[in-house]
Image (cartoon, rainbow, N blue to C red; front, side, top):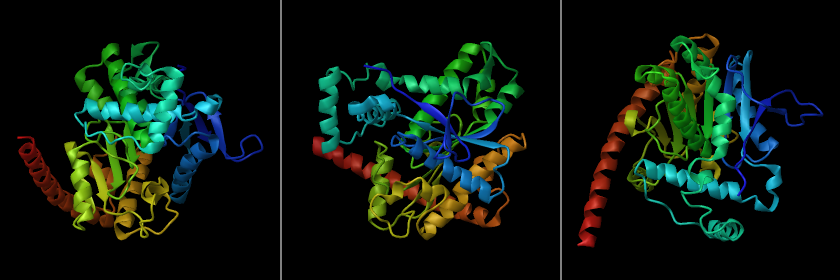
Length: 379
């Protein structure tokens, strides 16, 4: 089968040549201060890719941070896919599943009726192993490597030689990444490739850690394993988002607590995910809207109280990341990114940190009860 596909574009002024205000780009210069938005797998044309970039563009303009900042986003589908339009979605779904399994998260949900239909079509076209882990376009999609070469490679090397540590850190800090849904998977695969390349270039363990920490990823509704990134990755999500499933007990029991009405806006720190989760982001909690990217950046509908508090922190994370790039300063820690010097944000942070600790204790207890009950049934 043909290789998977990705294209980069930059947010520009609207014109006859660029009716959506989005222009295809060959690569992202390592010396630019920029934001790259890796959208969900529905970003399959210029208009949708521009929608992601436009949200960030409007946010930076609102806070007078747009000058000197270039905004990019991506498309995952080639127009030539035609009748095989469903293939990227299937491959991406299986790719995410494999990454979850790599980190021991194997509670795989069954295919939906529509997915089953697509699987049958794919196997008819390409054979029964098309979605197997032995297919490179599933386990290591070629579009990841192409994106790496266009965005990250020259931040860590020049003519296949490692850079001085400070220079590599500076180039990496110039780039801020925002993801939505499948974009979090793309980010983690880019991180894997970056780590492997730095090892081959001869960077020490300490150098790799210092460089990687300067790469910021703010992830919204992430459809990828949490708590595994070596970068500075902060995630935001909703317990009522039905589009994502993390294939583990954490997600299963979090949903159960939320259904009981006992879940509240929580921050799970460190290896627990560096993730902030709301019971409900929007006020109406309408079907399907909890997953929307705009809820977290430039809301188009009324937010719940938890959604408003989450928006305060998510915007700080983006804005403080961009500020550090513009000022050529290292990233602050997670608390510093989420709050800055804003006392209101600091108060929210301390509150949701405490709630997160309480919720995590409940999650652990429920998981143990589930495992004991499961063992009893298997005797």
